[in-house]
Length: 283
Image 1: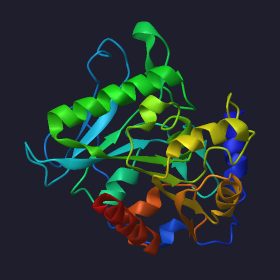
Image 2: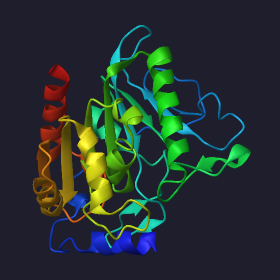
Image 3: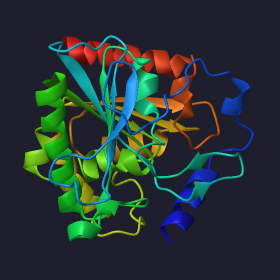
Image 4: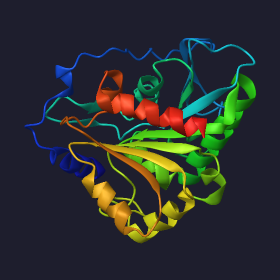
């Protein structure tokens, strides 16, 4: 059911829009490997306390990282898995398949962490390929992992940025603003393709706008960069009607693809996103 809804929303973007494949990429996301973290390396890790489970995340230390250097942290969540559309866009729902953080940073100046939605219980805990898994456990893994990145690798606890595509974009508020404890973690949010509260038909409890509004109130004036393929208007209309005063930047991408691949290309939207992030961090 979830996958059918995702397909229906993505298909609403006009097929007459150009395809991202018409613009050559200028970045290639590093392969995630089971290696020790190092500058310029993307490592697969499991946070302490989950060693007996199949839960894992990826950690990328930028090419200009060095011990003792403090850097902002991009925390990314993936879209739903098992997704493919008529344009060849694919989402596997895995931490290894994330790409927003690398495209945003270009591999320099930011620590990039891709976190899982955690499903299961006990030693059967694992990464959820679709939707939220266990929200409380997902939140717990997030907080523990960010604390570890700050303590061990020089992440700046005052500059933790939430990034998400599709399911991950909805998660900016659904997970990132789920309660006061986790909401305090974030400096700003980057949401690409879908947004919490816009579509009340998502197949999980709390997808309704009244619940989404409760989460939105925890945003507390922090900035969000919100983009969407084709048009971002449905999200803008929902937020403008919410009664919440937000610092929202809305960007429509003139491409038909339900994909985060746009950040791997030198597009005006990527330049705008990078300038927005630099301004946010300079505040």
